[in-house]
Structure formats: structure tokens, C-alpha cells
Length: 363
Ligand code: FES
Image (tube, rainbow, N blue to C red; front, side):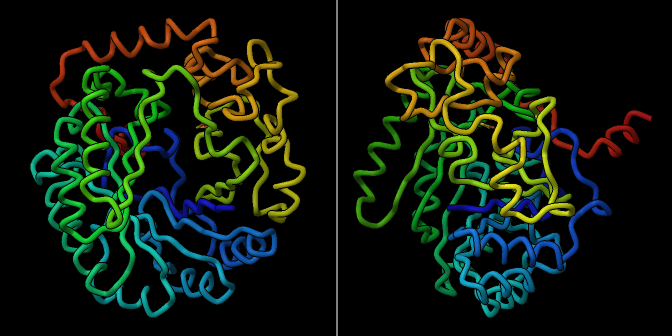
């Protein structure tokens, strides 16, 4: 169904919950334009309908307009997922001319001070609002992405109203997912259960208020759930993720799983990777499941939940997702959330950064 193309890991923002891996791909190791074009054409032949041009910050790639034009030419619905701070009007017009279908813009909070603190980027919030205005003025469908956590969850109502006032047609609210960078910041980001319940009520009221005008998708944190979600729609079932170096993954965080044999676009075509690569077949279907998932009547629905979460919490990617109340690790999982949410709340984030920069800063 969908291809997530992480064109680059370069990004001016430093969000402490970034979904990119800890070991970021350097500019010199990024795929060249021709290989991305080939990947999109192969995806189209495979039946992929939508490509999400993401990162890092995809507008950092100088060939973005060419890639969008290529997607449009071959009939791939293309969605630009952007932080919005590097795009000016001229480039937005060029993207539109090339056939850009949709813009998904991330905001960090309702107000500039908190938003810029969370993003670790001064002046970013105003630039994002301006890009949103320009996109809507040009008739581009706009989705606003909010990653929600302890430091912005109380402002969720204002955040929704801000997106509505900007003319967004859809809002995607997702709680921080605790892999990689966010796992390093779990004590700083985790909301309490009460905060999550209040946020749920805010979303329900906003849905009623904006019915017919604004779609609000909301994903709550697994830590307070009883049942796991079918992560990525099931492993190797609906989604292909390509990292900036050309490694093709069944989910954006799959690289955290040790020993997973990941194939690259540099050596294989996409169809072969989808059908035969060990990474895609590792957790496809249900043969890999173990108790309590084997024979569970919910397994066809939850598809085993999230493998990366099982690894992060239980230490084994084959284990039941600890978000499931039937998992022997569920109580400990919930206790981690309660403990993290009780930690002091000042936003001293451990920001995302390239390892090289971290080494220089230390030295
Ligand atoms: Fe990798 Fe859920 S994030 S399977």
C-alpha cells in the first residue's frame, strides 16, 4: 500500500522523540537520485499506491522537485512529510508544479516558545505556520502532525484549534513511540494515565466540534493500553520503508532488531526484497508467534503488535508485545510508564544529534 521513503536523515530540528535510528546515515552515504527513481518505479509496479517523502527533513535533498515529478509521472500519490522550516514559496511552487499531492507538516506545540524548545530550533514554529498558510492558499491538502507527550499534552485542545484555523483537513496525533531517541527521553516525555485520559476526552470533543470538516486521527501510548496495535498493519504486510542509504525495512525502527538481515536497493530490486529478504520474512504471518499469541483469537487483528517494542522492553523481538495484557511482561511495562511519568518534569531533553556532532561537542 505505502512506501515510506526516508530521503535523508539530515534535519535542522532536534526533536527528542525522533523516530530515526540513533545511528544516522551521513549525507555521503545517501542514495543517489537515479536509485530513488528506480525504487519508485519498482514500487509502482509492485502495486504501491502512496509514497511518503520523509526523513529527516526531505526538503534538505536538492533533487526533491525531480523526485516529486517522477512520482507524479508514474501515478504514485505523493505526500511530503516536512518540518517546514527549509521550504520557501518559490520551492513550494516548484513542488506544486511538479505534481505534489499532499503536505504533512509537523508542529510541536500550540505556542512558539514551547514548540521551539521541544524542536530544539529557534524560530521554527513561525516558519512552520507560514508554510502551512502558503500550502493552504495554493489549495494543497494539509495534514498537521503532532507528536504528543508530557510537555504538550495539556495544550492539545489549543493545538487542534490551531490546525483547524490553519485550514488543515486532517490532524494526526501520535504519542511518542519509545524506541531510539524517545527511549532515551522516556522519563522526560512520558505522560501520566490521567493526562492520557484527559487528552482522549479533548480529542472526542474536538471530533464532534469539527465533524465533516476535519479528520482527527489519534494514537494513544501503548504503555497504558490493554491490547497491542497491529504495528505497520502487520510485519511485511502493507508498508515498505527505505532508509536514506537504501536499506529496505518492514518498519522504520526494524534496524533496532539485532541479527535481522536487511537487503539494500543497491544490490536487489524492490520486488525481490519484498518477497524474499530475510528481514521481511522474519515476522510475516503468524508462524513466528509464541505463547500467549499462538492460538489467540485476537492475533489476526493485532498481528502480534510491535516487534520493536517487544525487543526494547522484553529483550526479544519474538516475544509477545508487552502492551498486551496477556503478556507476562505487561505489568512491568505499565510500571515503567508510571515510574517514568513520576519523574521530574522540566524539559531538559536529550536532543537528537548526529554522532559526529556529539563527539565534537564532548571533545
Ligand atoms: Fe517496528 Fe512496531 S516499530 S514493528
